[in-house]
Length: 137
Image 1: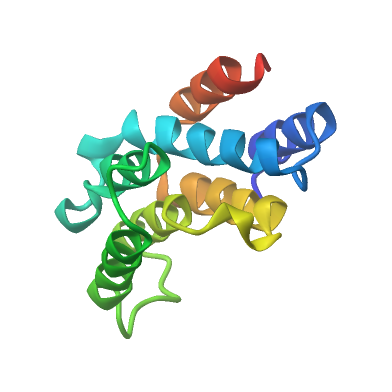
Image 2: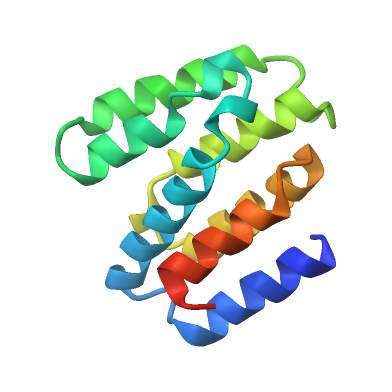
């Protein structure tokens, strides 16, 4: 993980208990806000990530809709899912946003989100702004 993102992740992890259910929701909202701020920089197939995740958090979308969206993203990178190509990494970042945060792997999902974000070349300033808005960091 890039040093700036490691510091940001460490700051979030020290400010909140990522294993607490309330913080899982907050982490999800953080990722939605961050990815939503760069939607136009994502490949077309992944531009719906923030909207679908937000709709799910507000009860306007079902778990099945989120799963179908996530499956569609995986299909879009099928056979290239381990590639370091920016478009693949951006889709992998979007997949993190659609990952269920109540699975007990909140910290791991955030670590992947930060790593893919940085490797994809998405703007650090947008990630930092979302962290300030959500966590006051």
